[in-house]
Length: 117
Length: 106
Image (cartoon, rainbow over all chains, first blue to last red; front, side):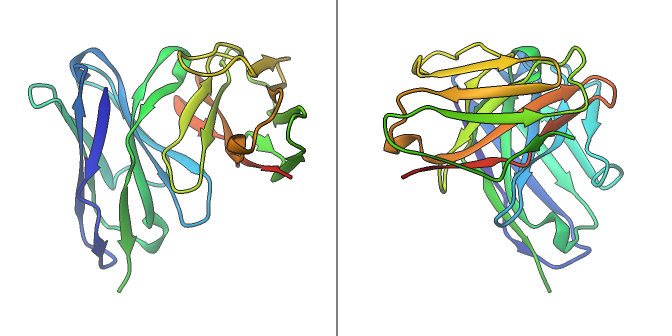
């Protein structure tokens, strides 16, 4: 079981960016999936979550209205579309699988997003 | 808001206690993650006191309702890492992490 993120890069403020998370070894169609992030030298921050059928998603307040999480169950991949990026969005973005009781039981290695002019 | 002390130090072979405080966890379960430098987080305690497969029994957890504790017995140098508590806040329907505690093994 593995999660591999991609798509992170340096981007200018205000520009969009899409991150991908490819799962292997399990079917994401059976599980809730999420994104979390970690700013440079900072702690973990939950960002977003999407239910197995994709019909409902949740967002941390600072990204609500700017970020959109979607899933492709056929491709076993989830995405995070990030719009109107600011320097506060700089950090490593992790994809994670939701486990029991609201935990996150499998994490990818993360992909680095740098927002800078 | 989940509150953690920034750092804890312990000698090899000793016991480390890392505390996570909150106004009240309500019916939320507390989970703990270990993050070593440059690596992804790893779930070490789930739902207050459960141990995922592969996690040594030196790791244990408890929850009093307003404070959760991660205890690491017989601490090893390899346990040096940042430790984060986390809940799913059912009132806001958001994931919430504590600020993290850096465990130093002297």
